[in-house]
Image 1 (cartoon, helix red, strand yellow):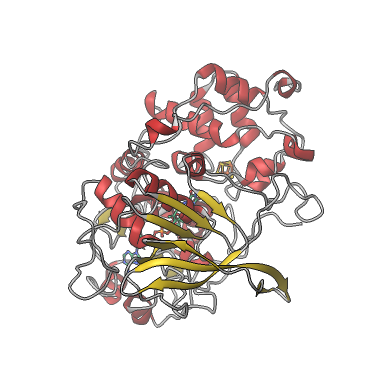
Image 2 (cartoon, helix red, strand yellow):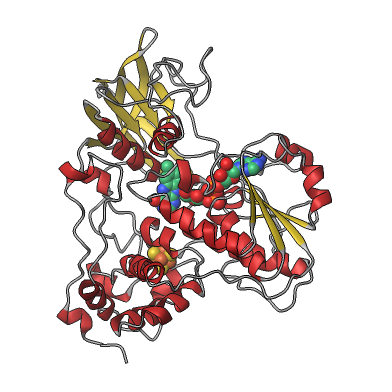
Length: 505
Ligand SMILES: Cc1cc2nc3c(=O)[nH]c(=O)nc-3n(C[C@H](O)[C@H](O)[C@H](O)COP(=O)(O)OP(=O)(O)OC[C@H]3O[C@@H](n4cnc5c(N)ncnc54)[C@H](O)[C@@H]3O)c2cc1C
Ligand code: SF4
């Protein structure tokens, strides 16, 4: 029986992050592993509520109270079985998920301290790997059916694993030279060391998933070939079109980049995949081969525009590259430190100030400002900003500049981390005869099937830029629908349907 008073005996506590002066000298993860004692105490704080709202807060429906109790009693093998029952890759979510489950934890009511669910999750999978509990589970027999998965992010990999274990022959086609989607070259190592992806890929390979890298479907292999080779196709090609502000005066200046033009080369350098030679031009400018060098922050005054994960990752990378100064600009006002119950009642996701570990490492945050102009001759030398007020009207965002509030900030490098505009147009969709919806995503029916029979969609490509936990949930659900389409025996788990949304008031 869980300990109903555990939360009275133990305070919420996370392992201490590595010291800032040490960690910004390298690219390794910021959190060390927790001791057994700490993590068992933290799991003891779980009350095993009659209605576990945390479980509903997680798109995967993770069985959180069950594995908390197994950790409390030190039963690591059973804990990983429970965790794997709903989540193919807890080593990714346990490191990277923003943890809507914790916002929905009963202990978080009235500003209380939630169970450290995400930390318990990562400690279970860390120990499971160390203790040899993560082994391949190849299908006992083949279904004789074959599936192509386009894209190897968390959605594609989750679907591939589910389908392979159900006996289907799965081939994953990936445009990049390495597998993992945004987790590989988008998300820096200080959040996710790539050995975690490689370790999981070894399991998928042993489960007979085949991988074809450096292969853009629609370019290197026509869609018609995939249609002939496979009985069904899953599109999991992400939402990789970076949002831009082409109309902003001075956007053309050298030194103004989309965030991914900074992050991808930086991560490739860490992976030993490209040289660290800096480029001093905008990516894509004449004479500059893509990936030929990196957009470095070294010695520069860096401005990051945006307030989400991508912006925080640019911040952490810029610290490690040795920026002279870093300022992060946000259009919205400074959020409150605590949940506003009138606006976002528990157990929904609250609008509060999210401090990422990168913020602890330095840099200044400026809220409620908008870019007016990138200033310079050929290269950017400053950015002109103005204070603004933002209101939502009829679902639209109205931004009003406060007169007389304009000022300039010095800038040698400006990074636009203002979101993504959906999945890419081009040969893949053209050859399928599919078009993006007005939000840039791909529509599908209740069975995850697009307008083309036998072609399914999941993850960011369907939902728009979102989270790893949603990508895994959609990958699992789309795999279940494909299994049924292929005439597979029984059914696979379906954590979400295509219309699912986060918990709302
Ligand atoms: C910088 C950054 C930081 C992030 N941090 C977090 C975080 O901390 N926590 C979190 O939960 N989420 C985070 N996210 C979001 C998260 O990474 C995505 O929601 C998730 O990766 C989406 O998974 P996916 O499988 O749908 O697509 P992706 O991971 O985008 O993978 C799609 C794959 O498809 C491939 N592809 C595209 N077209 C083709 C083609 N024609 N042929 C073959 N392959 C193709 C791409 O190369 C890519 O590898 C972050 C995103 C970014 C950009
Ligand atoms: S996947 Fe995310 S939401 Fe689900 S239990 Fe883990 S941290 Fe919580």
